[in-house]
Length: 330
Image (tube, rainbow, N blue to C red):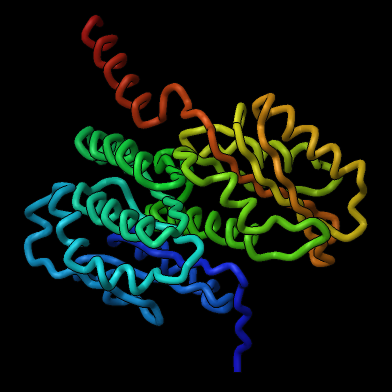
């Protein structure tokens, strides 16, 4: 019989819509940690195929014809009591989804309202649409991001365009978002869950992201001889629309072999401190793991971060306008 370890911090992961359910499907490993997965969606192929997951299927026959936020909120409000029952008792709920459809944004808003009504920390991780999906969806995502930033404790948005890699098949390319979101959830759960020489508890996590709006996550992994590479990967995340530089709050975890030296710990700490705001509140934890061999892993979570001046999806359309103007002059 498979042993289940239950983290003392009560974590739940809730997905909204088809995209959210895709993310949730890749997080089966959370079950062994006692972390419940919950899916909230209208009826569809994706939620129907999920197994061993608490499903809340919203009652709707016309969602496809009515893509607006208020309709989505109305759908979720009809099942609010089921949502509250599902998330009750949690310390934190991670809410996963895509920002491409208005009615899913409405469902997310109502769900976050239910989470906050129970005094639970709400943390959204969502993807924005590809630029080739058109201006309308990108406009929807921009509005959705603003709305969710105002209601959730913290939100991380992933720019789908930045996930694309030349040489990948279409199937591989489209699954990158799923694996990226799953990787972030795994990393954040480990920050909350793992015990080490210096531990970060839930209060440290909450202090970093409660009511912070925009949040940042970075994950760095490299040989200890290339510790600067791990620091660089952890402090610069190319997939996000914000950056760690100037962060007002930061929590980071170092995981390495037990023989990691204090000099190496200081080197990492000094680099993170230099990139954060001058008066930033910084918390760190350290976990020893013999399986790391000669590797070092750094996970950074930050709140009070700035959005980059020009997101990729907006830059795409700016380039298209420039090219159109240039060609018309030829």
